[in-house]
Length: 80
Image (cartoon, rainbow, N blue to C red; front, side, top):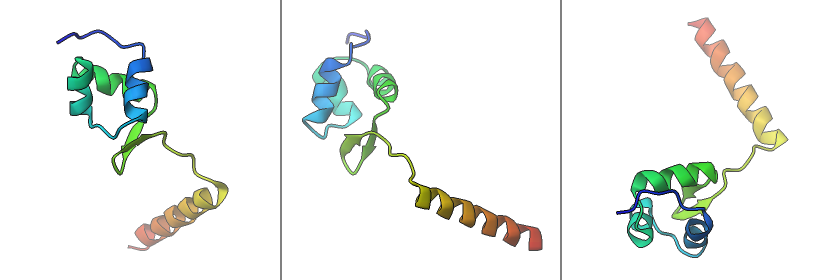
């Protein structure tokens, strides 16, 4: 099995047109799973519900909800 780094075009095409796992991509592209994993991280792709997607940024409301939740948990911890 070749262990070289793909330029990304073939991997990107594979993940955009199918819902293959890293193990399936390893076999179809004939590279190691480690190489696939490294390239996916470099492309900032994650697997969500069987699809390779970019992680999203939180919007203002989601960030505010996180902040409020953290503050409530800190207060609860300090009371104990």
